[in-house]
Length: 172
Image (cartoon, rainbow, N blue to C red; front, top):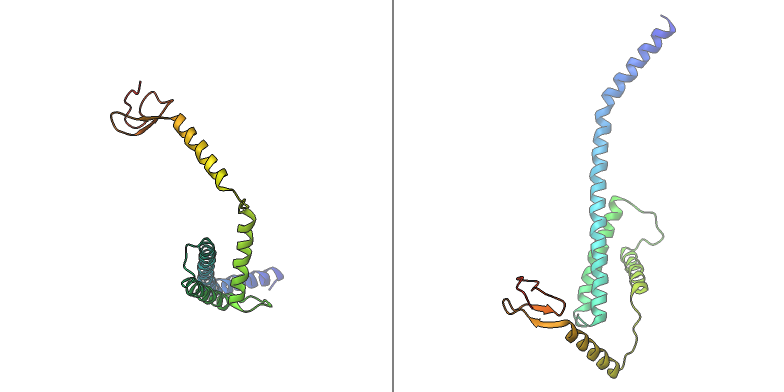
């Protein structure tokens, strides 16, 4: 046997081995794809819970949510978020010094709140007289623009309108 024929036989054996081993790698790829899909779904759910917590905090600060209901709702959302983070840790373990799921969730909420606070407008105190003068100016501005209503359909019309924007009747 020559050296070329030995390499040919080894190449054929290698190709046959790869052909036989291919189904085993496809199975592991499918398992990896399923895990990736589950991790993605859990991360999306985690983001929804964080947004819900931020909205709950915002609504509570505005006074839309009663003080007696707020702790229960917040606790339920925190528990749901902690369960999601535990599930994420089981699927894709993260090496972290902070292994407490609720603490990580609170940290994510605070970081999101800091972003919201940076973009929030700064409150300026305005006296009642200033508000009344702004309202009077706004009413005057609206009165100058309004020409009344269309005689055919009853929709509001502006001074600059020659025809009704709703039905097309001539306003002149």
